[in-house]
Each structure stands twice: as structure tokens, then as C-alpha cells.
Image (cartoon, rainbow, N blue to C red; front, side, top):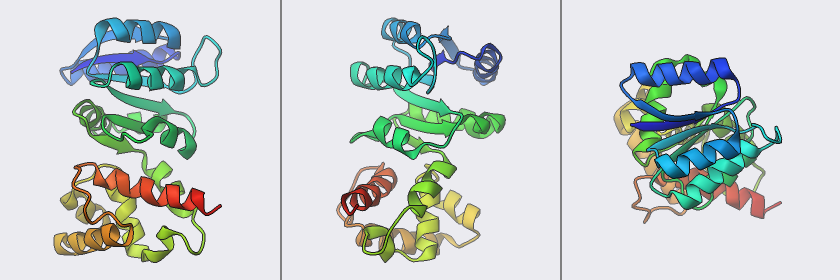
Length: 219
């Protein structure tokens, strides 16, 4: 993969670059400034851009704004946003109506090198990755009468794990249930969320977005 990195913490930026280089990937651009990173990304057209949410020049959501620009101007490039805090609203802004090639992770996940590199690869390949804590907060913020209320506790647990991008075997391993049980729960989830005809390979993220939007509409 060809990767661009936007992170104003020099040590963290160099650490991510080394992790990816050791995994056999090419870091084509690095910057501690969001506007500079955006300029470089538009020139290099990386397979994936890894960007911190809060970056100079303003030190606010400059990184997120750069990520949104890359999503709009380089639709073939994946974007993986890193944040120090769990902010589900930012994840939803980034995903929008197109979950393909987008990810949102807490910075602490970088410590799990294997999972981090795997997440970068999935986003670069057009997949979707949501941090488990972000998904948990989305799942936990529901009220009686919304779509989520129709799901059982086990179905909510399955939905939380599959929104992270896990395959059915991965869900089974995480929750210590059989593959057949996973398939049964996923079928029920799609039916209850009105996604039975959804054929996209990103239907797991679509499922999360479906009930989050329904929840917001009920407020």
C-alpha cells in the first residue's frame, strides 16, 4: 500500500510510519499540518490516508476536515481517522452515506500492531472499520421505540462486533458462539432493521447507520 500520514505528534507519526514500513508498505507523505497533508495527498494519491482529528494549523478539527476533503476529491483513496477521544458523531460525519474505504479508530489501538495494520489494509481495500468503543456507544444510546429496541442483547453484541469489520468466524470467536448462531443472529438483525435486501458487502456498517439514524429521528 501507498500511505499518507497526518499526525502532529512527531514520535507517534514516526512510530506509525515505521510500523507500516516494517509491514511492507510505502509511506509516500508525512505531515504534522492538516493543510499540508491534504496538499501532499492530492499529489501522491495514496491508497489510504491516516489522519489525526485534531491538528494544526488551528489545532481543532483540521484533520477531520482534511479527511473529508480527501474523501470527496480522492474517492479511490481510503481514509482512516485516528482520535484520542471516543466521538461517535465524528465517525458518522466521516462515514456520511458512503461507508466504503473509511475507518475511525482510537489512537490507543495502534498498540495492537497486527490489528492496526489489518485495519489500514481493510480501509485501503475499500472496507470499513469502526472502533469497538465507538460502536458500543452507538449501540448503548437508544431509547424505547427505536429500531435497536427490537434487537435482543445477543443481537446487539453481534452487531457491535460485525460493525468493526469482523467476518462471521471472527464474530463467533469473539463472542464464543458457533458459526451457525452468528448467521442466525445476523439474519435476524437485517430483518429487524429492514436490511433484508441489502446486498452490499458493507451491510454491517449500513446496519449500524440504519438504527443510529432512526434513533436520531426519534429525538
